[in-house]
Image (cartoon, rainbow, N blue to C red; front, side, top):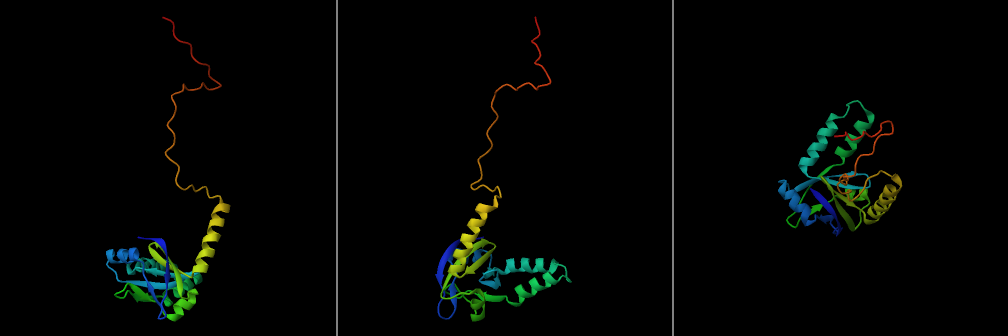
Length: 171
């Protein structure tokens, strides 16, 4: 649904333009708003339908688990509904911008079902760290994926060591 990286300015009132491809995706989903909450080192903006899926997942967590309650409280208590204005911008409240360390510039990325809004320096650091991690991890993930396996050759099968080849019958 959301993909790509955009470098945008936040105006003095705290309005952030939503990239046109993201606005189109929101419109296709029948939405003109996002739910924004601090997550990791950035702000995550979810279309209302995706936020609904997240709420279902949070409800499914164990009700008496301290970490589950903490996660739910943090995500939901700091979430804000942000409507797109006629110019395709969302207003990010000052406390939300401060929580993410956002100034006048933002790096906006699409991450499948959500939009993330990063301070440019934090995004650059994340990319560097992630690239280094992937190099070190040895996850055996190849990109692009290897092509289809080669077809077997028509070479005759080799006899197994414990069996001798059979002689041709005589005529």
